[in-house]
Length: 442
Image (cartoon, rainbow, N blue to C red; front, side, top):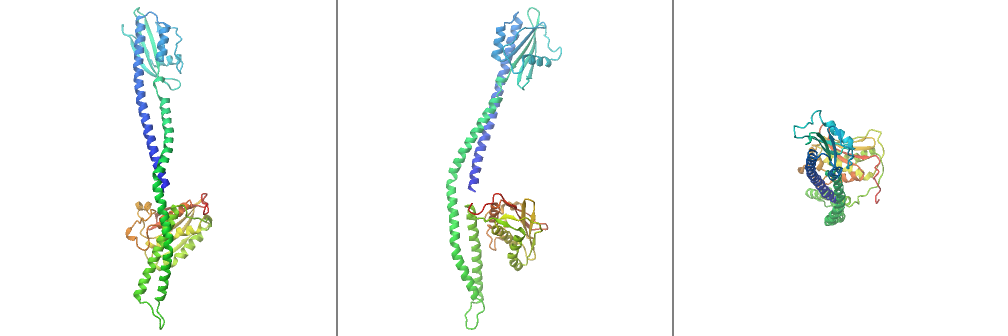
């Protein structure tokens, strides 16, 4: 229980921190990237204005100026003068080839869409995607020069220096690696935090186990003396004293309460051993059909006393399973005891077995009042009873918790369902041969 609590504390703190870090990194890098793109567009417009000015006012463009513009701003510049391309090889090499990018930009221009208006230049802007998915800002401009010629400018800016795709994933990976280190730290800190609780829990279990063990002896003495008094309370022969009817009732009450207290002590000792991992198992071959018959046979007198019909259904073939027979019988006794407690006179309790291939399922079905669906998950909690008014009769709400512990030791599980026609069915399912089952002391 405490190890699960420690694990939940560690995962909760680590995952919450990781989620906050990753979301923060994603949002911050996204905002930073948007700001960089705004700067890129501003720089691109500045480069476009500078190039247009040069083409409008200069008869020729120097290669040194073009090279400096390209390398400083990651640009691809191509110029046509009256339909004749300027022979400039280019200084910047984008991931997609220069000619391919210029052809892609030209294909985006509708025919006749690029023409100057008098002495004013016209420009069209685009966003291009390269061969490898990279992004570019692009513009095509028709520029009237002072000498009357028309020059065409193709300007393309690479945005790779303004995008944080790789950096963003690097930051996320760093955050995840940090989260792993944080998880180890949280595991250590949570272990330190639950250490007092663990020690207290261990002392409590040791106390319960010791108290339960020590109470067994005086309870055994009380029950033996109560049995002797009941025997002496029988009608005496001539010359012998005997207890009166009221004394017999008192003695019977003492015996019943000793029995109830003995069951409670046994249950507490079983639970303490389960919590400490000392609940022993002696696995071996078990025949499910014979197990059901033996359990039913042991409970038939009590069922007959209450006027309840006890039936067994175990149709062959049923595989031989690997389990601790005494523990499984203890589990079935708990389920049967609950069914006998809440099934009215004239009702039916049915024990059955099913073979579902790799698993065997043992069912205990009654015709009692059943348990509401919203209460079924809680019945395995200790000291929990779905109906507090039904708490009499020697039940303290520990039986099903013990049964669940026994089921877990066998790599099995208990689940509840509604009996057709009314009532409750408690089913126990386990693998035919659990790989995790080990002998006592392993």
